[in-house]
Length: 359
Image 1: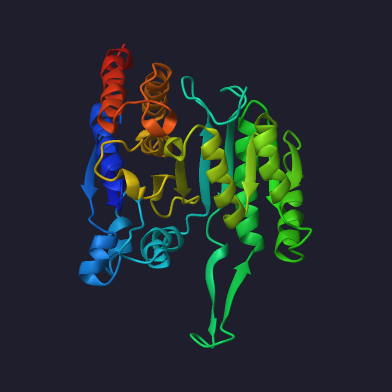
Image 2 (image 1 turned 180 degrees about the horizontal axis):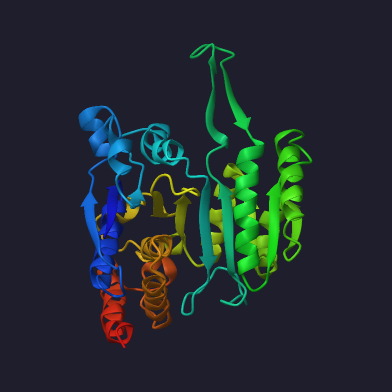
């Protein structure tokens, strides 16, 4: 039996996590091994305001006893963003060495994307983001704080180990997809050290994967090309910052950031991986029953894949595809449905699919 930790967090996180739990309840015994214990933890900004930290001192030890983590959102108006992000999400990602952030983006049938003339066949790609280094290493500081001439230094860290493990994962993923194409994204014309090392290591890894057609693309050119020719990308591998920015763009190309799932992966399985939607706290939607649950539900599908429950993961993706194709969409994706109505449709599909799972 899998043990799943749920951290609803801030903003609309509790609302979409509630949908995730409904989906998991519908999938119990869907296939052999589809059983779990779910425990929720009240960590986040409200916990910080009460206790002075985003999670308790033994929070990581507690999570390490679980098989997977579902995470809602982090960020509030009451606590500065750098406190919330570093105090909770990045504390988990770096504490558990979640080496890769995997962020697929696909325009589903029934969803109107922002690009005229582009349909589901044009937008189906994956961003593989290095997840522990770069500008997110946390190395730097201030000088002459609060005085004229104040200076802030943020040190970017790229290591051969970090780049290589990310690149190897990305090339293996590309080799498993029909198109077998990969684009490595850097800014090596301006970043003369970090990006150059990235380019060198990726080229070395590419030599071990002759079956994958690959290219190196500057990040600004990649951003433009994603808008002009999204079908030209299959797997994108990028540094922490570049991957973060580009995956928001690819999420938007899929119709809404609310549609975008992600996984923070412990590649060696030493710690539980963490699965979360990309959308963030979305203050304007809190308590209105309008939050898009798709990113969270598709993150559940990624978690099920990670747990070895492929049939359940396929059923979840089919349920989301069917729901969207029937026009049951929240307003951010062009529809009029509520969070509850979308959740009801997804769960109803899974309930109807259950007999087929036991044929």
